[in-house]
Amino acid sequence: MNQESSLPTTPPDKQSQWSGGKETIESPNRWKKTGETWLIGLLLPVTLTLGWEIAVVQGWSSDRLLPTVSTILNTLWDLVQSGELPTHIANTLQRVFLGFVFGTLTGTVLGSLSGYWPLVRQLLDPTLQALRSIPSIAWVPMFILWFGIFETSKVVLIAVGVFFPIYLSLSDALRSVDRKLVEVGQSFRFQHHELILRILLPATLPTYLVSLRTGLGLGWMFVVAAEFMGAEYGLGYLLIDGQQTGRPAVILGAIVIFALLGKLTDWLVALLAGCWLSWQDGFQTGENHA
Amino acid sequence: MLDIRKLQKRYPNGFLALADFSLSVKQGEILAIVGGSGCGKSTLLRLIAGLDQPTAGSILLDGTTVLAPRPEIGVVFQEPRLMPWLTISKNVAFGIRHLPIEEQNQRVERVLERVGLATLSQRWPKELSGGQAQRVALARALVGQPEVLLLDEPYSALDALTRHDLQEHLLKLWVDQRPTLILVTHDIEEALFLADRIVVLQPQPGRVKSSFPVYLEHPRQRQDSLFLEWRSKLLAELNQAAQAHEKSTLSA
Image (cartoon, rainbow over the protein chains, first blue to last red):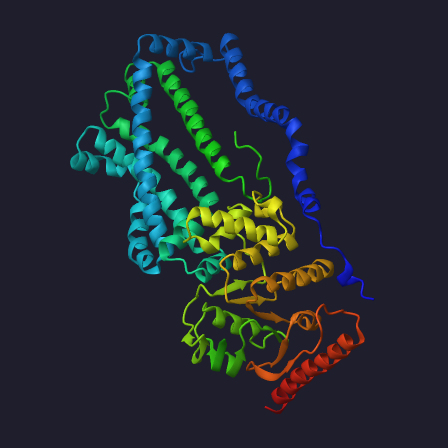
């Protein structure tokens, strides 16, 4: 008799064994692994800092030109105690946050539209590409003229910086979404907004989240430019202040804070991204981004 | 009842994929369409699904023309085409998103049970094997309880064992609601195992060469002498179709 058709169908409990093994094997080592990753990441900055400190203490370099880490930390500590630093940080964070939110919103909306409708793309893209090549600093006088010297002009400038990477990568990513997945949506009679929200945007999510990080990075660049144009508070202002009063420790202190905040906010976005992307099946996905 | 009348499809590049194609499919019939590559099998299925428009002729489902995808028609593609960012149960619910959430959950649960994947409902597509993924695709097409189910070489990418398994499984599922099944395949054995009627296509342009009912009792046995006889008959028919095409291209 026929052998093939008498074969039993696979029982459900066996099927679940096929796919479940991976995570359970990894989990006991996970914390150890995370610790190692952190150590490797810290190796370079710690070595550099120590070398720097030693160089100054040994007299190979002058503390006036290149203040040591301890000098910078002391300066920062003084600024914290006087209450100045928290104010500067709060001001800068607020600007970056607002600029990031507005830039992301406009970038997402326009990027989606121009990625989905060829007509919108033909209409918008040339202009936006031309605007993109204008250096950020060039906008400063006009933004002050249009939006005043206070917060609005600064937030707008940061938003412009955040907007472009998000707009560009979203509109490009949308156009390259797998046609086969889109067809599934069409076969279920999806409307335009459903196609965008349920298939196209999720499919582009990995690229989109990377563009959020790029956008945030540019936001941090642009906030300095923004705070150079007459701010009373903010880390950019602190930078200028350190320059004008001849205190390199303050300048470097501000730079250190920028680095820390930039890293911290990027890490937060990456963490969020990791939560949203657990479905991804790629080379080295699941590797942490810290 | 699905009625295809004098269908023609010419692509913008001038290629004539289907010409003068007529076919009637009864409600609840299992129809297999076999043919070599390039004879318009997939084009035909896309037209019936409403994913593409014919250049001439029409497709009528219960008397109304198919112009765009319709809820009564479900499609299973060659690849599972699951959304990698949705869990299995959410992927299945894709087809019934307009229903209230409770009914969605019930239906998804029921259909996953029927395809034997109830335990995997919260998994990601990347965690499934090829056969499991194709079952999910089938569940997604069935959950809306379509009148017509179109299958475009659904098992061609699977290994022989899994393929046989899923073919039997498909018949078991069919018994439940008895939708019209239109299966496009290049696998003669698959067609013989499943279909009530087999239509052989002739290439360039794609048209019906012959159509014959399969008088074999279910469950069919692949090693049965009658089954094997049908198989060689069908193979001869396919070869003839291919040769006729070669001859016509040589003389042209």
